[in-house]
Amino acid sequence: MSARFLLTAQDFMSNYDGVVSNKTAKSKKLHDQSQYENVRESIKQIATLTFHGSRLPVAAHLYGSRIIGVGTDLSDLDIFVDVGGRFYASYNKSKKNDEMFLKLARAIQFSADWRVTNKVLKTVVPVVKAVYLPLQLDCKFFLPT
Image (cartoon, rainbow, N blue to C red; front, side, top):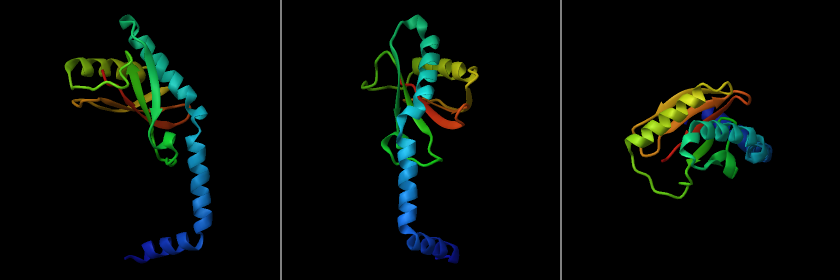
């Protein structure tokens, strides 16, 4: 083991209570979902406007490490964008999925509150990675169809 690792381990063990208290406090702060309500409403509004012609219900479900209380400051916020009440459905990769995904990614990209950083296609559940600019918060959107 390197001396750097041993020093870090020694520091951790000598201040175990402080480290655990600090991590617990940060985790509780990140777990507070009220701070993400603007994020949820922003993406719900974008998705509703994007898919308004389909007349399908739109919801945004938050999940992941921040929501279950084990997140860190570096954790992103995972958001399941539900168009048409498909939260519990099974999914298959399809051209329709990719088209809906690209439509949502473009809408997010043109929103003043968001900056798209990556798009992952060719998967069963496409992913948009973006930053919610008002909070400088990294987010991942999943849009199964």
